[in-house]
Every structure is written in C-alpha cells, then in structure tokens.
Image (cartoon, rainbow, N blue to C red; front, side, top):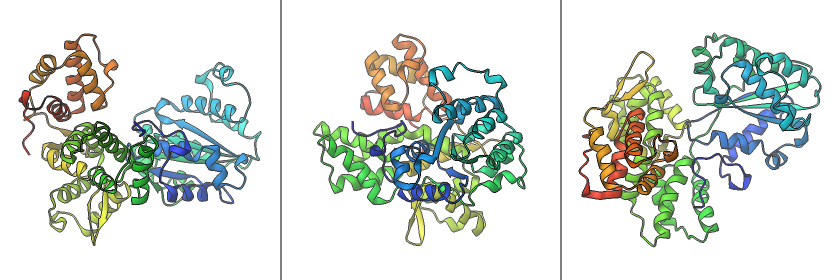
Amino acid sequence: MPYIVGHPIKRPGDFYGRSQQTRRFFEIIGGTQAQSVSILGLRRAGKTSFLQYVAHQEVMARFLPDPDNYIMVYVDMSTCKTPTDFYHRLLVRLKIALGEGEPVNLWKEGEPGRISMYDVEVLLCHYPQKRIVLLLDEFDHLKTAAFDQDFLTELRAMTSVLDYEMACVTSSYWDLYQLGTHIGLPPTSPFYNIFYPTPIYMSGFEYGDAEALIKEPAERVGIIVTHDDVQQILQLSGSLPFFIQATAAKWLQEKRKKVEPNPAKIGSHMIAVMSPYFAQWWRYFSPCERDLLLALARKDRIDKLPYTDIELSEAARRLLNYGLLVRWGEGFRMNGSIIGFWIRLHAGKIVLNGRNGTTNILQQDLVNPVQLRQSLVNYFDLEELRTLCFDLGVDFDELKGSGKGAKARELVQYWQHQGDLTPLVEAIRQQRGTLIDLPLPEK
C-alpha cells in the first residue's frame, strides 16, 4: 500500500503539505537570533513527522542560507523519566551530531544518573559558532514523569547563555501555560518569554495538499484516483493527514480488488478503527469544546449553548487550529463525517469525571464482554483474529497467550481498557455480517 499510516514520515519526498508551517518555522529559528517556538496539535496530527522533516539536511538547505551552522537535535520526551535522563540523552545526541565520536562508544560513556545541565553546557561552549535547536517531541510527557518547574527554568537558562546559541522547539497537545501550571510553574515565569508569542499549529491540510496526498502515492503504484474518489475520501476523513491516509488506504484496497468502494461501509470501518484516537482527544477537550462539537455534529444551534460568546469563540478558535472544525460560510462544520458520527454515537455515553474535566466512556448498554469473547472464538480462526487485530490497529503479537481463546480474551480486555468495546463490535460485524447478533449502544 502506498500510504504511510501511523509511522512518522522519514523521507522529505514522502512528506506532503505544511508549507506555511515550514516557512514560519524557519523564519523563527533562522532569524538574526534563534527563537524558541511551540508546535501544537492533536495526537496523530503529524507533529513528529514535521519535526523530522524540518531537521532533514535537504529541507534545511532549502530554507536556510547557512544550514551547516545549524544542529537540530531530536529528543522524544516520552522516553525520558527524569531530568537527568533527559540530559543524558541530549548529551549523547549532541555529541553524535557534533561529530565527537562514534555512537556505539558514546552510549557506553558516563553514568546517566550523574549527568546534568552543566555537562551539556560544557560541551556547547566549545561550539559558539553553531546554532543548536532542540526538537523536544511529546513535551506533554512532563505531566506524567518526574519533571518539575526547576526543569523548565533550566531549559530557559540554557537558551540565555552568551557562550553558545540554543533554542527550544516543543511539540505537544497542551499549550505551554497549561503544562507549566500542571507542574507548578507560575504564569509569570520568564520561561514563557523565550517562546515566539504564537505557536505553530498542525491543523488540517489545504485542499490541494490533501488531493496530492491521496493521488500521488497511489499513482506511483499504478492506481488511478479520480476526482470523485478524492471528494468522497475527504468527505469521510476530513483534512488531517493521518485520517486522509488511513481512509485512502482502505478506499484503495477496494479499488485494487476491482470493487467499487462503498463510502458507508468504509466510513463504518474507519469509525471502528479510529475510535481510540477520538476517545483520547475527547478526554482532553474542555466542557465548552465538547458541547460545541456535539452541537455541530448534531447540527443544533450553537447560540443555545450555555456559554458566553467569548467562551464559544475561544473554543471554536482552538478547534479550528487543531483541525477538528473548518469554516463553513459564516460559521463552522465538522472536519469529516467520521468524527461527526463518532461524536453523535458516543457523546451520550460520556460523563465528566472529576474537576479536571477528564472523561470516561461508560460501559453500560454495551455488548456483554463474555458474549463478545465467545463470538471471536466461535467465528474466527487464529489467522482471521490476526487480520482483525491489524484492521483495528492492535498488535496481535503483543496480546498475551498463544491460543485462539487466549488471544480472543486479551483482545476484548484491550478494548475494555480503552473504555469502549464498540470498535471491536463494529469490526466483527463487518467481517461476519449478520451471522453474529452483537448489539451496539443505543444512539
């Protein structure tokens, strides 16, 4: 299949869109003095792919007059449990990027538990002519790991040293003020001052970029995608690249089998596959954002919602920036029918849990898990279970046990832990049709 679905894009030739964000990124970090910047987007919006794209030498050469003077260092913050762990990883990557030794040897040197910000600074002071840009992906991880306000204060301190030049690029869903507040950093902290005033959002694609993302990879493998194909795929997926690629991949599977793609059937499949991502997003939306999305999904009047015009305007602005809404005349509409249908199906099953606004999807009214496990055992062999897991985006080999019964049990438990068995029910229905009577939650 010609589409890269899930994994970050590694080759610039496979990267589509984001031209405006790319230009802005290099304007900020390539000015007279490098500035730090925050990149914001939903999970699966392409933040990691963007960071790896702008760090590629070929791309840097297109946008920077002196690319050899820049050192881009990527660090996945979700792999760092403590600030000491972060500094160790950063020091290793810096030494590799600066050519101070072979990677194999570097991993063996020093004790990670003793490395601090000062070890990094000692190295950087030897390279005052280089502009160091830290690409800190999954910056939200600071909320769950052993990081505190001192860590953010140290990051700011490193960008302010005169003996070398360094900027930070953070990638997250939460904005920096929310993250800082969570770990105890006061809103008046000078940490926020080092960042460009407005973040770069990974929003939805423009139509031309979305069309190219669908057509060009397919045509490289000899599949002709018509204008009507593009229209129907985008009507389902919306304009966020991950969902475009996932929907287009399913669409082209049908075309390769010489079958006319059925939008309703493909839409049902995609709702089941994408449900974990939608549920994850939903947990982090504010009450106003959730109510606005639900009203738009149901095509209700938003002026009847119990919020001020300012609150609704701010919620709409964020949802537009994150690519969940698109402008439609003088108002807005959902960005894709898949997410709209998911909201209509599940919003009534969702309750707020606690003062922080997190949510859980209730399990009542869903199919009995015992019945679901038994259906998997009765109607699927082991290879068919493997295929079902692939369609759902679940790693079959990561499920405990080796027999069909064990795999079926673990698959049901996996979706129970996700908080919603509906995607599994939908997937089984698509594979076995009316042979299995599995009820869905009432709408």
